[in-house]
Image 1 (cartoon, rainbow, N blue to C red):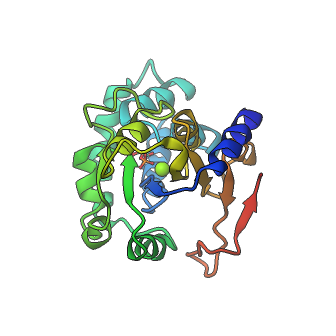
Image 2: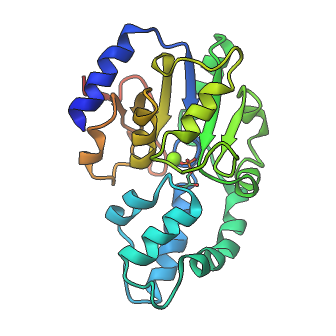
Length: 244
Ligand SMILES: O=P(O)(O)OC[C@H](O)CO
Ligand SMILES: [Mg+2]
């Protein structure tokens, strides 16, 4: 997979990048912590712990797809169905989402690209109702996006790692469809990185430090968040590991 990714990246590098697509949860917004917290709470009831190997398999996916992974991988599907899991976590998530913070550096990067006339958009697996809650405090930033594709969009038949959402995003740029080789995607999730590569695009992965580094191999470049304070970090030019 790594070779395939690097080979794609080599051909992608021959074409100039002209457009950028951003993932949202865990990339622009610090929302993955909410999912982690509620999943820890639910699993504690079954005397089980939530860990990052399971998190890695869930993040970035559509809600029902991630829910199926959760109940099956933890072995609780006889007690809790994927559908009931979604109902149970919903009340907690709805209180958390309006408090969503931006990830470090995301506002600066978006404003920089927008000010320089680079067409940018969002492709998020989250559905519209949750999207509205998460972005309540960030309307100005998201207004800079040319368009936003959400997980419940009719063109998104399958969630990440299917390329559907990134291809839909490429189609909607002005003068689209844009050649995938000219698109750079920013992603935090293994499923999202795979989706972008499956769409033929180049990907910068910004992984959580707790994610196993084997998931870095598919991405064209890794940007690591280096903490600058106890609670925060900075997404800056000095924090990268080029895999090419
Ligand atoms: O990472 P996103 O923005 O595609 O969102 C996916 C889910 O909502 C959260 O993992
Ligand atoms: Mg994400």
